[in-house]
Image (cartoon, rainbow over all chains, first blue to last red):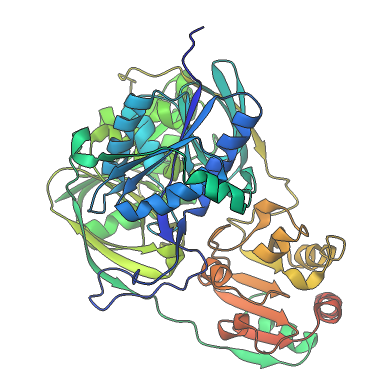
Length: 253
Length: 321
């Protein structure tokens, strides 16, 4: 056994808060983010919560929270520190990266930090791509377990239950590994004021993206963003019997 | 001209419809060839599953790869084999199911190329429409027509390609890739057979905070049973402890698109509405006539759930006779 700290790296993304109704911007190439509430991607919050619980059980020594984005993202990293992460790393870039470039960047961070486990949400609720964790695992040449609803570490491996379409799949993965988290894994803790104050004193390193030698070029171009056709208000019925009759009429039953 | 490789999804005995939907998507790419690769644990399964894939209209050729390591679909094991097979193709597609969502990004990263997730429509072989923000916006995304592209196909957007009049040829291939041993499939705990899966069910009945307790939430289950539907819950109901986490419907829960969605005592927070708005028919029952859920409901009933749900169950029983 070595004395190296058993480290968990949690990768988070800053996204439009899940309670905000997104609006297409005037150029129709994105959504309005000016003056809009931004939060930690909810699935990443679950990933961080799980990392903290693993540390609290004594199965890890340190939790590092990491993000790849602009200086504004420090705000979400501070939230992560307030939740209980030990320190934070921001890989700073002014441009928005595609999932492959994010994975390449995180791979560079992984090589610096040598974590035994990388946790991140199964997807971000803005792009909904569901790619970054799997891509990181591929570049790193390590196991992946996506959509985790349970993670149990034992020695050099982890047993992960995955929420798949056919039910629950159980995988054993050697560590280090990448695990992406699904909704039912846990319920993230609420942050209390003293922790927010304490988080201001925790270390937050800023690394310029250029220092990591990642090609941040975009391959895809978003040519248009539009709202889907709206559903109109339908009919109103007065009784349960009428409701069943209306369903019959639509041929739904 | 597009040369498309599709990674077949199967459950060991049958090739799933998601594969035929990928073929339907590939057909929109002006393809020169649409090949399907099937991974199986032994030659017999490979031949049987390969035969099913070969029977899908629009398939040019099936590549069947049998190896004991392929007995269960483990992304880290399948990905290098797909990379080995993919070299002669312009597009590599998989379904946007948990199988394809898990696997395809790993393939893309090994190939060093980007991925388009959840293809809803193909405007040109390198130009696609896809949903973002839980379907609240539709993006049109394009890239230069050079190099390879990996994509996943959104199931709700495609009808499966029909059966072919004559089957495509099947080629048996050996695994040449070096397969990792760091990931071990342990077991699959299947869903309870009597309760449809929330994510793929054609009917879903969901309850909200109005039920007031976990005991009362049983009413939701009773109506679901009557309709042969899966059970769902709003975030409020989950947060209040009336229903378990895995039943949560919405942007932070499950985004679903059933034929029938029945919302009981759910007011309709934005994050909930974005999770259900692709449902074909939405029914809402709520005491509050101003509830936002009514703005998108096809059929609305302003009523207390404790009166309306038993009445609905009775009316459905009446109808059966």
